[in-house]
Length: 260
Ligand SMILES: [Zn+2]
Image (cartoon, rainbow, N blue to C red; front, side):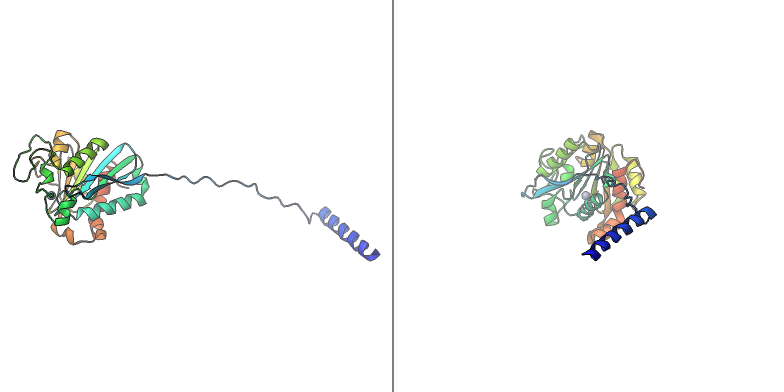
């Protein structure tokens, strides 16, 4: 017992000596600082069924962002000119992956404006109407494919409704096969900007009667570009289409700013 008490005493003395000698110092832990809250920018991105076609196909819009500057981009109003559809879908994915592009902006995408025509590979909708002659423009004429009255078709009504709801600052409608960037309304500079980012030349084709270009560009005064891609773009995969035209579409979205 005596030896054990001595051992404990000696151990205590040793600890005290070490403390006095500075060998045992309380650890000076660094102050715990909470890491800064990560800045999460929540950019809305949602799909919405905006209506149905003559043959009851749902027509989907993809809306990204909620800023005041609005770009409306649509494809395949002519069902036989469908290369714009994979391009616009790809654009939606790109914007979701690059939300900085959406700060202060809203982008409304309509990947398939004429699903019935697209399903049949036809320019017209299921009632044989050229939707791009079915708008309420001063130059509209009634003929075989114009529809009996302006906005007689559910598909053209949906486009008009989207324009009324979102009040876009600019519109791009993707077509084939005229291989140029056409425009209506105050869109010459926008067309030229898009032309800097792809190989299509800017060409003013003239407003078609009752077209979306005539309605939006001339009647409403909204800058609208008719983006006419090539015939054989229909054979390209979405990556190749994106390489060819993606920057031109993004340039329209950030317009009048330059792409960084
Ligand atoms: Zn067309």
